[in-house]
Length: 181
Image 1 (cartoon, one colour):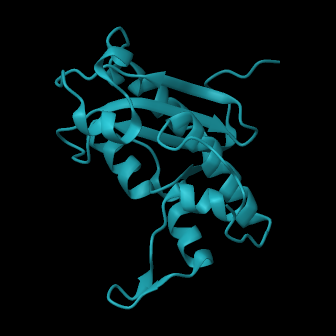
Image 2 (cartoon, rainbow, N blue to C red):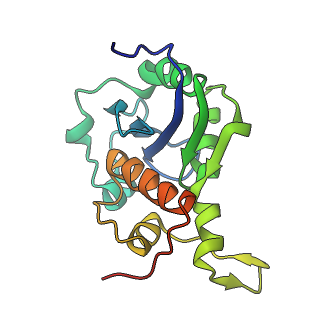
């Protein structure tokens, strides 16, 4: 049978691409969510409602005004995203502090206690200690994926969720990675 939005997916993986780093002033230009089996639950580009130029976004993720010109704004997808997240047992996000805060700033309500920040968990495995912060240094998703031998096109939210799931599964299975070229 096909699954509806009301069904619970054990694990969901979320990633956003945004117009910048300010959760209040910047906007979401791509949202992707997959489940633990890599089924795509949502993958949409979103047209910003307040920005016409996207120089910061374009420089990082390649999303231009032309790509999103005829797309719906994130507000259209917000109830769908909220419903999906509220039917999860676990939400995996790489750099959850950023993406979850962005979604909350856009008015979405969901349970932060079920979020696993794959970036923070990987930092400890990677083991690059920062004396100043007295903590493990955060690594980019591309570094984490490379550590486990996974190749992907970073900064496309659908590719990023697949890479996040792969890294998480490797960590969960206790796989010992190494740096690959």
